Image (cartoon, rainbow, N blue to C red):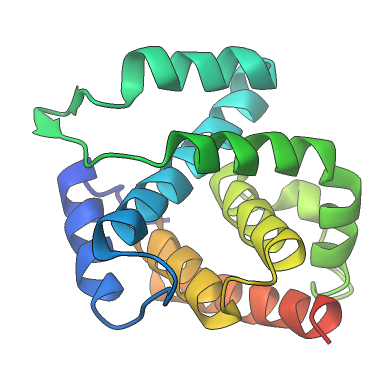
Length: 174
């Protein structure tokens, strides 16, 4: 695992990657808000796992204290708070099915429980979107989570996220 980037660096990296792809039914501002929501959902799932906090507590905390504020001295772009809440609630509600879909794409000697908590949150969020939002192009979902992985990890983990989510997509989107 590499040293985590600043929030500003992560958002700049995601903005650059966003130029490479698009969700055709969303405006640029809506796509940006969705990207921020994905990042926040990964952070929320990580927080929930480590601190043992409940889903509604974390969603409320993000809505009241994290969105529309400065983080590390940088203004966070506007988030699609409803989409953020959908991801977090959806991952928790469907976690058994999501984990099964992810485990099917891990090497036989890999255990999901032994994967880094941030990486698990990335995989779970991405898998949830692939399974529950077939209207969002698979390339958009995979690219977004690969870019998030690059913000937190080395290229090998980003390639792992790409391969795992591509496999989940192939298994769940016929």
